[in-house]
Image 1 (cartoon, rainbow, N blue to C red):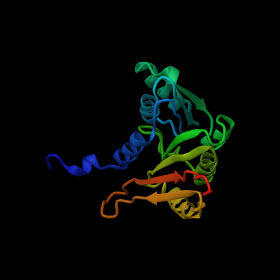
Image 2 (cartoon, one colour):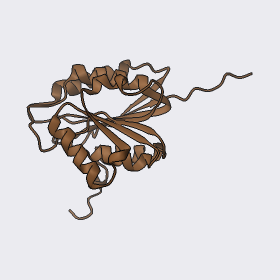
Image 3 (cartoon, helix red, strand yellow):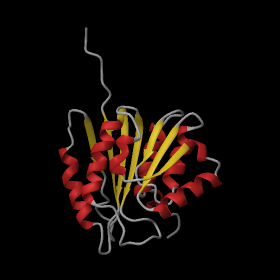
Length: 199
């Protein structure tokens, strides 16, 4: 099929459009799942020379790939890539200072499908990230699942998301309800902007 519009409406496209509209030069952002570094590079381009991206991964292969991609594009000064669990991100950023945090839950692209994110650390990382978001900040998730892996994590994440405090955050799930073959699920979490009380 020529010019299939579905190719331009993937979970990644949705998330990148939202992040592109939200992130400004000079912002502080986190790529919680560095993987091959494509999202880290995307964020580094958006924050500009005065911004900063921190990326996390527990696989040395992913950290090396991300650093190499940043060097290839001359962006290594805009990002630091850390070999650590994303659940420890509060050790690397101050509360209320991060404009955007992005997660891809699943496995390393082109890597070992037996090594993938786990619901316990994923939920802990989301909670940690929420504490770091600035007022008006945004967190994005893409939940990948399929084959023999990812279903338990998907179910745990989808059960956790409705429990997030609705007085502070707005959570939007956007499942592709009529697509087959386990389409990834994009999720957006917005932290409300505090408004000054009326005088």
